[in-house]
Amino acid sequence: MDAQQLFEQIKKKRSFLCVGLDTEIKKLPSNMRKSSYLLFEFNKKIIDATAPYTVAYKPNLAFYEAEGINGLKQLGETVSYIRNNYPDIFIIADAKRGDIGNTSQLYADAFFKNMDFDAITLSPYMGKDTVEPFLSYADKWVILLALTSNLSASDFQLIENKANGLKLYEQVLETSKTWGSMDNTMYVVGATKAEMLTAVRKHIPDHFLLIPGVGAQGGSLSDVAKYGINRQCGLLVNSSRAIIYADSSERFDIAAGIKAKKMQQEMEELLKSFSLI
Image (cartoon, rainbow, N blue to C red):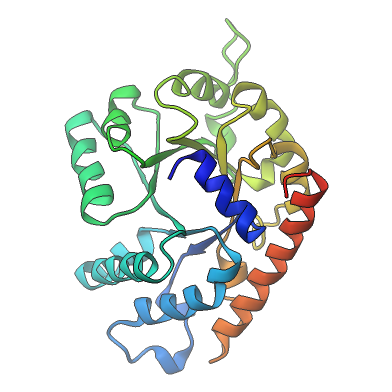
């Protein structure tokens, strides 16, 4: 899937929503916890309830790796279920990998060949050779950490280079945008940094951005669109906890669908206001 195809899905669904599958056993309905395949069973219900309103899913690897081999099997089942039932939905491995080239090649094989993800989040801080193995896969994407929404992001990302006036995250954008293209490279920019999207767009006006932090972390969807939207939308806005844990009862999937639909409706109005649909 290239950028134009992703934009076509956004227009078709009138949505740029990404649902984060941060599935944590202790937060799931108590009546489900006896199952040995709980993560997948929960995900399946969430996916069926939210698929009409989302263009992407983003499982966070930590929640599956924490459960060992059984958790990884359920991650694989989750990806297969989306592929088989909702083949047009974009699937992101939120893995935040970053290692030397030969190790990165094995990570690329694991996530793109063996697990069939469309994209993976990566840390770019070890440089180009750590990202290149992922870019060698046709029709797959890298999503590079640029400006994150965690509290200590400013420890490094906002440090300014006195020689050229660029902050570290800006240097990451400037350097890494030459490694791939608009059809295989996205960037993570936190929704809680929405006003800084103007600066981000000066460096990468046409790339897609993955925006976490809307919902439970307090980011504003309208601000994200105001400062970050481009002529192909250029945004995938992720919501995890606010959707998948909208209700803790047996009706959790219904509540998740309602929450996803509400976000889709807000996104539809924003897309209309920017004359993108």
